[in-house]
Length: 519
Image (cartoon, one colour):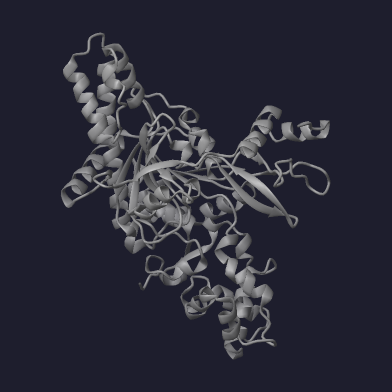
């Protein structure tokens, strides 16, 4: 496939290489193999259960060790909140009160979301803000009909010349309405939350990945709330930001796998999903890194319960990492006795859920040591898993690779061949869901940082279909940050309660009790 000189200049200006772009196009042409799931991870079969005693023990371990560790909270917070308001954008652009009643419009379009939005209007944290805006524009809100009220309300929220919520970063939207007219954002809630479990020696470090255009807004918000939050928590906050790097963008192609071109003839490159953030994570230096999405927060009364389980996950990480490091140091010794090899084998199998290859028993002792070192000397992630209540997204599975080796992975339904009855049955029998609740150890037993790029399964990428300028295209997403990007980490799944998972995917999620002060 030939590229013009202008194409090559554009590719290089995006910090990409021609070889990289050609390899991306080749992926479109050959396709991406489905992930082969061999079983669902369930309690005591890939997912560790907790009880009151173990919870207490792991919290104690974390509390004892945390001031000897550097802690960091990593929050993917890129992008605008457009999808939160998808049904409202549709309503504002389509609805005409002169042509039909609001109930008729809702029924015709099956917009139950709009009905819920109307019922909960006064419970949204931005209710008074919208009313003040409407009043300033001379709109007599109280004397409008119900259908006019909801239309004007939604219009004020979304109009780019008014509050423009759909084009604001989700992390800075009004999320929670506290007493004394204090409206908090998800960004602010992450600060309060991190003070409870991600601080050591009186300092909480947080790193947010954001769109570059929003950095001034985040910085301004932090300056506005910093003194109050630090005074309330007794913790000093060290905040840093990074952007999704342009070099992780991928080329878009037509449905015939030719480079998709803009009207001016230039190539189209697109952000490659949250897997691109592996570069951002890889640049950070900390002993323990908590990973949590920007919209998964709660009002303050639930925070201690939530923090308890973050401490549990961190306590499990410290416990397993300590044992892992001990065995790696022993395996470095000149002489290894067979009892030590057996101990390490049992640790891999029973504590790290790593299935040892059938070929292993044929190896010489030297090769056994090499094999065990390779399995142990990896980044570790402890992943909270909640019971599946029908949320869309990935889940915990046993996965079989091309050599029939099995490992624990977080897999999205899009990675599974749903036309295969066996694969579909395994998916249907899954009991748990991935809420993106990770605690990561990214240093080895010598205290050196792992290069996380070395632990990616590049076959776990995604091809999706999109549109641009009314034309269909295919887009390539890199292996997801907690999917294929961490495929070759040591992975531990732990059951945590559903209170730890409270995402705001649509605006109506703000009406749920974990986001309401009065319940």
